Length: 416
Image (tube, helix red, strand yellow):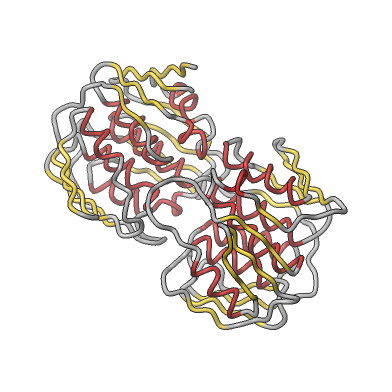
């Protein structure tokens, strides 16, 4: 099992190109189920979750070539099933439910696994599919769904759900009639999926707003599409610049994707220079100032950047309060940050961070994808050596993050 050895203290400088977004690529890969033929997706990140989705699609009957221009090609035989052995490592596997049901008339999908950051139930997905005429039952850990043809419906999500919005939007593209999604997720990844579906011939309006309208069509066609930038990778690297007092130019990512983070970094004393829609620079101060953050659905402060920002606040001047409103169990990284010398008190979904003068290197263990990134960021600023174990979490969602940080001046060694 790999681990990272980090020698802290280096100010990161230089420029970095951001990879394609894992959270946009996964639903786009699932969308290929909807149309027979050869699809081409550009800028797929080479991360473990993408390989898992490729394995799942191959099981269903869609061969995937994971090159820089990745191709997804249908076979003549399909299995409308997502087995536990594949699904157990990745929650996003549930994204095949809507496309399979719409395309094949049935779907059998194992209840998913993935990061243990709190409950992310599929009840909103299932409730919406039932409103569209699907018959669903849960049996032996599997979702069994049937519908000869889904019917358009008015769907109101009780809570904003990204994967739920994506799943039902995909299912609705082949439904009879019009489907309206209210309280839909507004994330850039949802809009990117809609753009891909539109290239496939879908009729979708309102993606990027909280009301999306989908007019079902009889069939879709394969398409070529380029995945958007990974805003969470961009935000993670921006936090690395902030905590080290470095200066990093981030390329190939629209700064508006992480505007909420950039505003908080500026409030904390960073300089953020935006050159255009694909290039911006973050310059960290000698010492950050403590600021408060509350996570929220897009365009609010992303829950996927909460752990990384908390790492920055551990060495900020003053006391900051971070409130986590999305997932109820997303403070597991706090105990590992405390091992590095951080002063953090957690009360339910609120963390109070009193900035310390310095962190001290230690052995720490990643508990989930974004927690692993927070420990790497903290290690960059810590005195001495930090050893981050269980970095398979990091590799699930970041394409060569340690290599990119090394190119910016970090002292990081990956040990097998």
